Image 1 (tube, helix red, strand yellow):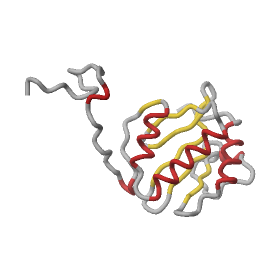
Image 2 (image 1 turned 90 degrees about the horizontal axis):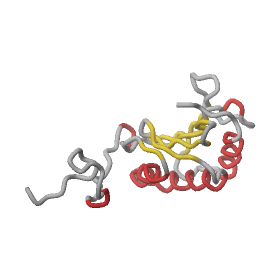
Image 3 (image 1 turned 90 degrees about the vertical axis):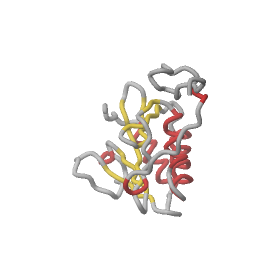
Image 4 (image 1 turned 135 degrees about the vertical axis):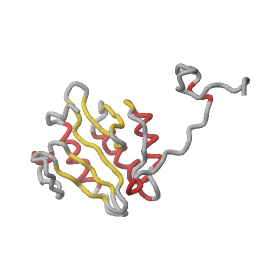
Length: 156
Protein backbone atom coordinates (compact mmCIF):
# COMPACT_ATOMS: atom_id res chain seq x y z
CA UNK A 1 0.00 0.00 0.00
CA UNK A 2 2.94 2.33 -0.47
CA UNK A 3 1.15 4.11 -3.33
CA UNK A 4 -2.07 4.77 -1.39
CA UNK A 5 -2.81 8.29 -0.27
CA UNK A 6 -3.45 8.81 3.44
CA UNK A 7 -7.10 9.27 4.31
CA UNK A 8 -8.35 12.86 4.24
CA UNK A 9 -7.92 14.37 7.69
CA UNK A 10 -5.67 11.55 8.94
CA UNK A 11 -2.50 12.51 10.85
CA UNK A 12 -0.40 11.47 7.86
CA UNK A 13 -2.42 13.69 5.52
CA UNK A 14 -2.55 16.70 7.88
CA UNK A 15 -5.80 17.80 6.21
CA UNK A 16 -4.40 18.19 2.70
CA UNK A 17 -6.43 17.09 -0.31
CA UNK A 18 -9.70 16.74 1.62
CA UNK A 19 -11.67 15.76 -1.48
CA UNK A 20 -9.44 12.83 -2.32
CA UNK A 21 -11.61 10.25 -0.58
CA UNK A 22 -15.33 9.63 -0.72
CA UNK A 23 -16.82 10.04 2.73
CA UNK A 24 -18.24 6.93 4.36
CA UNK A 25 -21.97 6.92 5.03
CA UNK A 26 -22.57 8.21 8.57
CA UNK A 27 -23.61 5.79 11.28
CA UNK A 28 -27.19 6.19 12.47
CA UNK A 29 -27.45 6.31 16.24
CA UNK A 30 -30.50 5.49 18.37
CA UNK A 31 -33.69 6.70 16.74
CA UNK A 32 -31.96 7.12 13.38
CA UNK A 33 -30.00 10.21 14.42
CA UNK A 34 -26.93 10.64 12.15
CA UNK A 35 -23.53 10.59 13.83
CA UNK A 36 -21.78 13.57 12.28
CA UNK A 37 -18.46 14.96 13.56
CA UNK A 38 -18.61 18.30 15.33
CA UNK A 39 -18.07 21.13 12.88
CA UNK A 40 -18.93 24.74 12.17
CA UNK A 41 -20.53 26.15 9.04
CA UNK A 42 -23.03 24.92 6.49
CA UNK A 43 -21.12 21.82 5.29
CA UNK A 44 -21.52 19.71 8.47
CA UNK A 45 -25.19 20.71 8.73
CA UNK A 46 -25.80 19.65 5.13
CA UNK A 47 -23.97 16.35 5.79
CA UNK A 48 -26.25 15.74 8.78
CA UNK A 49 -29.38 16.54 6.75
CA UNK A 50 -28.27 14.28 3.87
CA UNK A 51 -27.77 11.42 6.35
CA UNK A 52 -31.18 11.77 8.00
CA UNK A 53 -33.21 8.64 7.21
CA UNK A 54 -36.32 8.58 5.00
CA UNK A 55 -38.76 11.50 5.10
CA UNK A 56 -36.71 13.19 7.82
CA UNK A 57 -34.06 14.30 5.32
CA UNK A 58 -36.61 16.28 3.27
CA UNK A 59 -38.08 17.83 6.42
CA UNK A 60 -34.63 18.60 7.82
CA UNK A 61 -33.73 20.30 4.53
CA UNK A 62 -36.94 22.34 4.72
CA UNK A 63 -36.29 23.34 8.35
CA UNK A 64 -32.79 24.47 7.35
CA UNK A 65 -34.19 26.44 4.39
CA UNK A 66 -36.77 28.16 6.58
CA UNK A 67 -34.15 29.14 9.16
CA UNK A 68 -31.78 30.42 6.46
CA UNK A 69 -34.52 32.45 4.74
CA UNK A 70 -35.80 33.98 7.99
CA UNK A 71 -32.31 34.63 9.41
CA UNK A 72 -29.93 35.20 6.46
CA UNK A 73 -27.00 35.94 8.80
CA UNK A 74 -27.45 32.64 10.70
CA UNK A 75 -24.41 30.74 11.92
CA UNK A 76 -24.56 26.95 11.72
CA UNK A 77 -22.79 24.06 13.41
CA UNK A 78 -23.16 20.40 14.25
CA UNK A 79 -22.67 19.71 17.95
CA UNK A 80 -23.64 16.56 19.82
CA UNK A 81 -24.92 15.05 16.55
CA UNK A 82 -27.46 17.84 16.03
CA UNK A 83 -27.53 20.92 13.78
CA UNK A 84 -27.39 24.18 15.76
CA UNK A 85 -28.41 27.64 14.56
CA UNK A 86 -27.37 30.96 16.06
CA UNK A 87 -26.23 34.51 15.62
CA UNK A 88 -22.52 35.18 15.93
CA UNK A 89 -21.77 36.87 19.24
CA UNK A 90 -25.31 36.22 20.48
CA UNK A 91 -25.39 32.43 20.87
CA UNK A 92 -27.50 29.52 19.61
CA UNK A 93 -31.27 29.97 19.33
CA UNK A 94 -32.39 26.60 17.87
CA UNK A 95 -31.31 23.05 17.07
CA UNK A 96 -32.93 19.83 15.89
CA UNK A 97 -32.42 16.12 16.42
CA UNK A 98 -33.80 12.89 14.86
CA UNK A 99 -35.86 10.46 16.85
CA UNK A 100 -37.46 7.24 15.60
CA UNK A 101 -40.82 8.75 14.59
CA UNK A 102 -40.20 12.51 14.61
CA UNK A 103 -37.73 15.39 14.51
CA UNK A 104 -37.41 17.40 17.72
CA UNK A 105 -36.80 21.13 17.15
CA UNK A 106 -35.34 22.83 20.22
CA UNK A 107 -35.83 26.51 21.00
CA UNK A 108 -33.31 27.43 23.70
CA UNK A 109 -35.37 30.46 24.82
CA UNK A 110 -38.68 28.91 23.82
CA UNK A 111 -40.48 30.04 26.97
CA UNK A 112 -40.24 33.59 25.54
CA UNK A 113 -41.97 32.69 22.26
CA UNK A 114 -45.59 33.56 21.54
CA UNK A 115 -47.45 31.27 21.35
CA UNK A 116 -45.36 28.80 23.32
CA UNK A 117 -44.03 25.80 21.41
CA UNK A 118 -45.96 22.78 22.74
CA UNK A 119 -43.15 20.65 24.16
CA UNK A 120 -42.00 21.31 27.71
CA UNK A 121 -38.50 20.68 28.99
CA UNK A 122 -36.91 20.12 32.37
CA UNK A 123 -35.02 23.35 31.56
CA UNK A 124 -37.22 26.34 32.36
CA UNK A 125 -36.53 28.34 29.18
CA UNK A 126 -36.31 25.48 26.65
CA UNK A 127 -39.35 24.47 24.59
CA UNK A 128 -39.71 21.84 21.86
CA UNK A 129 -41.62 21.24 18.66
CA UNK A 130 -41.96 17.60 17.59
CA UNK A 131 -42.35 17.36 13.81
CA UNK A 132 -43.93 14.18 12.46
CA UNK A 133 -44.13 13.12 8.82
CA UNK A 134 -46.34 15.50 6.77
CA UNK A 135 -46.95 17.73 9.79
CA UNK A 136 -44.56 20.68 9.45
CA UNK A 137 -46.40 23.97 9.95
CA UNK A 138 -43.93 26.11 8.01
CA UNK A 139 -45.56 29.46 8.82
CA UNK A 140 -45.60 28.73 12.58
CA UNK A 141 -41.99 27.48 12.49
CA UNK A 142 -40.86 30.58 10.58
CA UNK A 143 -42.55 32.83 13.14
CA UNK A 144 -40.90 31.03 16.07
CA UNK A 145 -37.52 31.14 14.31
CA UNK A 146 -37.91 34.89 13.71
CA UNK A 147 -38.76 35.45 17.39
CA UNK A 148 -36.06 33.09 18.70
CA UNK A 149 -33.31 34.68 16.58
CA UNK A 150 -34.00 38.05 18.22
CA UNK A 151 -33.52 36.71 21.76
CA UNK A 152 -30.21 36.20 23.57
CA UNK A 153 -28.92 32.77 22.61
CA UNK A 154 -27.25 29.93 24.46
CA UNK A 155 -23.45 30.05 24.71
CA UNK A 156 -22.82 26.31 24.37
